[in-house]
Length: 277
Image 1 (tube, helix red, strand yellow):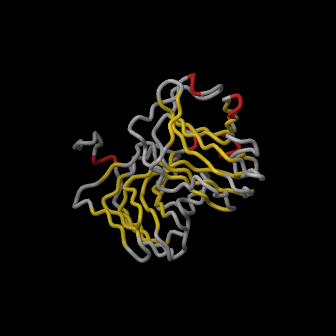
Image 2 (spheres, one colour; image 1 turned 45 degrees about the vertical axis):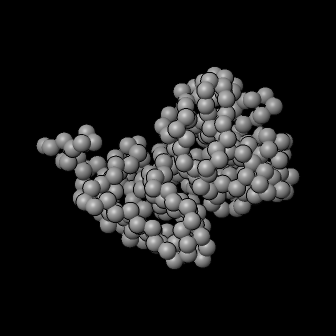
Image 3 (cartoon, helix red, strand yellow; image 1 turned 180 degrees about the vertical axis):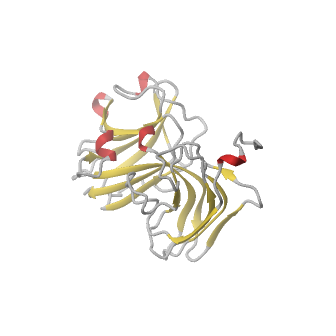
């Protein structure tokens, strides 16, 4: 059995599968329990660590507007946590169950107090959140997106691909936050806040101008996205031809996903993908 340069034996993998579909969601709809809107999941419905590889991918933006796009892998629920950030006491309250369980509208994204918000963490790098919002925020909120640096500091992300910092309300249905992972992103230490999970990468979203009604989610899904591109015009095609090679995605990924910042049922996606056999 041959072992390739990525440390995987060819015998571990199933056959290549061609995916060619319309993709109506921004990423996957924000429900980590459903595979309805992912591009590909393991035929045996494994829950994670399936070692996805792609040899080709493309997306055509047919949303009617300029969009940002990309491809990647959804991270399984057991590898991330989420909860409310209370800024006055620099405290994180673990609410992972509510963010992952679709049973109720109970995952608070913020409060009506300035600088409160939510925090997501994982032991592996992630750079995409799909939030299934059930209660829209109201008002003229401003928000900041921050990542853990040093031993106690939070640094603002300024290269977000899908995130509006000013006067943008959470709307009912899927809301996406996508960014390019900073090179100096480090796992959290005790100084990053009371209750945070030390040793995990932290991503914080705060309302620096509070809404009059706070947004609440039903669920959220977390992703590692690659090949990000901004400014794809309507009807234009973004293609990732790997020339007979393949790209190994996040080892812990459980499903292949596409990202298009503007949801439209006409958006078209194709990919050549395989998973560990």
